[in-house]
Image (cartoon, rainbow, N blue to C red; front, side):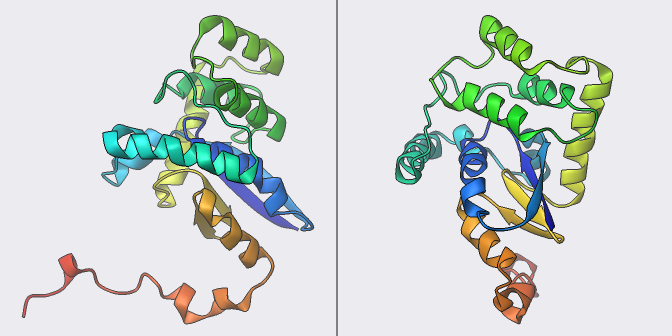
Length: 214
């Protein structure tokens, strides 16, 4: 049985879409999934990146794109009333429901759907209180233990070189983005191509900025 770690932040519509599509992608396989919340912001900053919603023309396209992806894959999706929003309360709430760094699929699903279905306002106090009551936290979501756990999850992701979400990790391999789900499936099906030089050595070449001058 393969263990797959799903790194995600609730702020990402692509993470939501990948979460919803994952069971279909893995149909017929034997696997265990670890759902691991991380904070996207530090991953972007580490690599000098901006989130799609931070670049105005890209923001417009991203929202249209994710709505089309939901339509094309029959995944219900509504844009939240405000985006980007502060994902920290949701990430900490998720982690407060467990004793470690991973959360159950039920918890991830409940929070993802609260944000990405129905077009509600993220952070609305009444809605957030109702969500919290539904999830029955085991720990204080605003306590230092939970905050430290989220930092630890994010630090581990940074150490592994993750630059965005969602990322699916298996066998030390990393598959980034909603559109990598078919790639993940081929890998799990044992496609021998993944053992060939095209995959193994893809990054082993200099970029123009690192080449010596003639």
